[in-house]
Length: 291
Image (cartoon, rainbow, N blue to C red):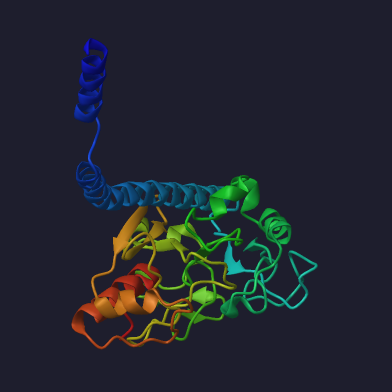
């Protein structure tokens, strides 16, 4: 009888320390609730880390851009990205707006880039290393945002006004138009006086490889190249004084266009807040509005 009682007692102990099915379901539910609370916070922290890495990349590129001008009689690097039909030559000998000025980066953009076509990674890296800016920024990883499109080795572009493709009413020949004390299309760093270097964009985070320079209208109220929505509902940019910053877009229409898989070009905002987003970019590119 004692042995049987002992067995009964041990059985009772086992029943007392075990979990019932309901208890297990409650624990699982609590864990699921905690995960639902914590995961967005963890994702935000992860994204903030990638945003910080992107901002550092842009800062390093801007410092290299400044160093280039310092060693070239204040002349800034050719802001176009090389682009040709012959992808075997990373620095094609093609006509340019800038005679005898090598592109800041080589031909790393596929002909069908708008449809998602990409060049091989080694071809893209060879093009980056052939660029005029590479001797001043020799880490090819700094040319790419951590959250850029997979397989694209360069995701940053230079804005039109920084010796890129000039636009209507921003130049006379190869000289930038001066409106008041503001030089619209810049060839030398000393021309960036009003507004000062801290207010004029050099590099932008497009999140993908594109040719030429970042196209921006000066004399009308619409986007040329699209607004790019990166790192949340904004984008990273860097300026002629070497600092970088995160810009948050305010308009729902700006964010909607920028989040498209193939963002809309020549987009004209329809709301006041949308026009404010556009004008912020235009002023940072050209120094002022032309309309």
